[in-house]
Amino acid sequence: MPDIRIHREHRLGLAQARKIARQWAAEAESRFDMRCDFLAGETSDTVAFTRSGVNGRLIVAGDHFDLDAKLGFLLGAFSRTIETEIQKTLDDLLAKSAQAAAKAAPKSTAKAAARKAPVRKGAS
Image (tube, rainbow, N blue to C red):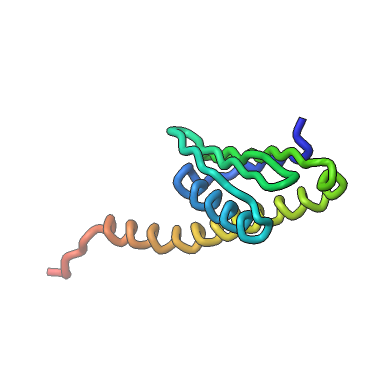
């Protein structure tokens, strides 16, 4: 059984979820000296991550993330702290993505509405 299990629902779709997973992996590699390997799939991807004392996977789907990690003996004592840090990082990335999508949505909606607006001719 994994020492850490995190599940997060989202509405981003697979393309945006992949971007977030890559950001998460880049941060894990730089901050925690992890090695992250990507296995792309048709409906989901897997990010396998490892370093001394830790191995796990992040499943990336169009509507959720699932992270499972197994900690070695020495890191097992810090599982709550590690889990909290992983949750914070993933939640921050999801929040940034949601904010960016919210900012982009009104602009594209307004443009679409302008294109669909009826053309009025001057009064005769």
